[in-house]
Every structure is written in structure tokens, then in C-alpha cells.
Image 1 (tube, rainbow, N blue to C red):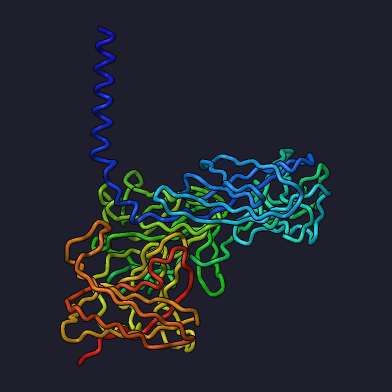
Image 2: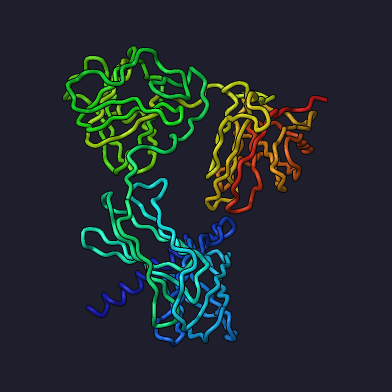
Length: 525
């Protein structure tokens, strides 16, 4: 009977695998939409024994294997899996190592690194650069410049409370270490090459600095019409009059208004609990979301309460703001989170914070999805003309780079591995290109050649596999001059559309840049 059970189990296992193969493995649609490996790098070390034995450990996001060409007379590249190390023995000399990172989709990314194999003791050129990070609290960065001699990599020795941490990097790169506490520390850098002998550089009493306040503003808030938000505290919107951001509730919290280059924020230190009294009680039942931005030097958790008039303490409801230290944390809390717990939303008159530590607050407001849309022409003289950014793009209404009094649209691509980041705008009135086929816009160019793609979509049409409308038309225009120019897009197929989409250099991965546009309008024959 045991043998029979094992045979049946094997048959069942084969059946499961066959089923998975039919249902899952036949779908290879991801190959067409995949991206090449990104952030390709390699940690290259050499043994300090005059043998010339070098270890090469490639890394990359999205790579499953690597081909390593050593750069000497070795003709055949070494193939290794992700996470593995290739080793090779060199004679003295300078070599160019080439690494090909291979993704699961078949797309590849190349990376090259020059290495120097020498059995002479390494020498520093410019001294190592040791500095506090400008944005991360208590982080120290150490860089060894490329002007060393007979060196390939370096170790940095960070010591705190008697515990030594050693971090390695190749010459020309930077290592970073976050200390638990600010104060004076000793840091030692050891330069290494192929020789047995190494060379040291040391600093004593380096001051580790703790960043205790934001050094940048909270994210820019999208444009909204007045009927789509209720703002308590935000420079982006019109706030409710008369709010008290430090009512006397017997708390030990210390309140201060904080200004960062003209950007107003709220600062709360030594928190136990803290209140905000809204100028007048607000009915937010027709809103959808509660937004707040919070910054703290340390990763802490704060309970955040919206409070209706007359609520008993046992009926209060809160949302936990889990913070990542040294950065702005943005929260968009669905109001259903509170209403589903029985909290009344028709007379909110206070907020309460509970927790510990010091934190900064900006952009407290309720909002809902836009109830009004823009129409052509789009000239950015009204807050209605706000495009929605997607993937890693960002959109804001900004000043014309040639005329600070003229508001224009600004697109920023951040280069986070996406190839089709862009912005789009839903129109209140449909655009018909059957007769009037031309749409124009003004585009401000930096003198580099860019491809501007305008896409018109029917948002009510069936969606494709990427959730994009299937009824659409797109036109590309190449621009390479410097300054403002008028771009013309001719939609010759004809159709009716309610959404405009813009891409700058669509399909180019890791594209970065800032672009301005204005005066989007249809030419009437």
C-alpha cells in the first residue's frame, strides 16, 4: 500500500505541474513590457599577496546572470549567476573589465570598469573626502578619489561604542555609514592594491551631525478647485480661518511655527499629545480623503485622530502614521477608514496627535477627486488646468523660465527605470479631430533633441492589457532648438477624445529632465 500511495502522489504532483504549465507558463506577455537590468555595478577586490588574484562580484537590479570579460588575453567571457563571484589572476598592468548584465526578458545592460593590478604599495593622491550627508541624519560618506596610484579598492573602518564596522568599495566610489548617535568619532581608510603592503589615512574627532529639521519642503501638492478640498494648513490652498495649532490641553508638547525659506510648517517637540482646533467645525462627508505630510529625524509612529464635536474619549478613532526618518512621509487616508468604524464626519472640529519625539507637519487637508475638468485651450491661468503625472513623472504649475509672471506647465522625469512616464489631463468637453485635425502647444526646450508625443484617448473605450484605452491616436514631434517654440500635432485619422496625454522621449529608459509647456489649443479651420 505504501508503494501505491507514493505512485499516486507522484502522479498527482505531475498533474499539478502540468496544470500550472498550461495556465501560467504559456503567458509570456511580460517579455514585451520588461525592462533591461538597471544600476549595474561591481565590487572588485585583489588579494594582497603579490599574486594578482582578483575577485569580481557584479550586481544589478533585475539581472539573473552576468558575462564577465576580463580585458586581458582571455578570450572567453566568464558566465556567473547573480550573487556569485568571478575570480581571475592577472599580471601587473591596467585592464578594462566589461560586464554584461542579463535580464529574464532577454534584455541586457553593459558596464565597464578599469582596474589596476600592481604589486607596489598603493598611494593616495587627493585625500579621501569624509563628510556628513546633506540629507540623511548622522550619515557619514567617504569617497576615495580616482587619482590614487597602484590601488584598486579601499576599506573604511567606522567605530561606534567599541564596535567596528568595515565597508569596502572600489576607488572612485563612496561608502556610507549611519551612526546611532551624533558626536565625535575616529575614521580610518585603508587603501589596497595587489601588493601585500597597504596604505592608511585617518581622521580623529570627526563631528557626526544629526539633522533635526527638514532641509527641503514637503512634496508639491496638486492643483485643486476650491470645491474639491477643505484645507486646515497648507501653502498650496486657501485655509480655514481661525485655526489654533497649539490649543492648551495641558500637554507637555512644545509647539513652534517653523519657516523653511518661506515655506510655513508646524513643529511639535517633546510630544505626549497635541491638538489642533479648526477655526470652524467642518462637514467632510462629501470629501473622500484626509491628507497630511510629516517629517521626523527618527522613525517613530504617531497616532493621528480627527475629532468630531462632543465625541467621548472611548469613541475616538485614530490612524497610525508610521514614519521613515529624515524624509517627508505623505499619507492619504481614506475617510472611509474612520466612517467604517462609526466615526461621524459631519462636524470635525479638532485633530489630535499622540506619541513621542519631535516632528514637523505640513499640508493637512481633506479632498475629493476633481469634479470639474479643463477645456481647450489650456493656458495654466486657472488651477483647473492640472495634469495628472504617472509612473515617476511629476507635474506642477510653475513660472515660465523666461517670464516669471507667466504660469506654465512643468514636467519632471526622475529617471527611475520607467520608459513611459508622462502626464495626462481629462477634459470636460470632448475634442473632435474629424474636421479640425491640428492641436498645438508651446514647448520650452533646453537645446537637446527631444521627441514630444501627444496622445489623444477615449477614456470610455475598452482597455488593453496595460489598462490603456484602446481608442486613441498619437503623434510625435521632434524639437531640438533652445527656448520656446510652437509644436504642431496633426491627428489625421479623426476621432472624438476626452483625454490628452504627453510623453517626453517616450520609450527611453532612465530619462531625466525638466520640461515646460503652455498654450495647448486646437486649431479651428
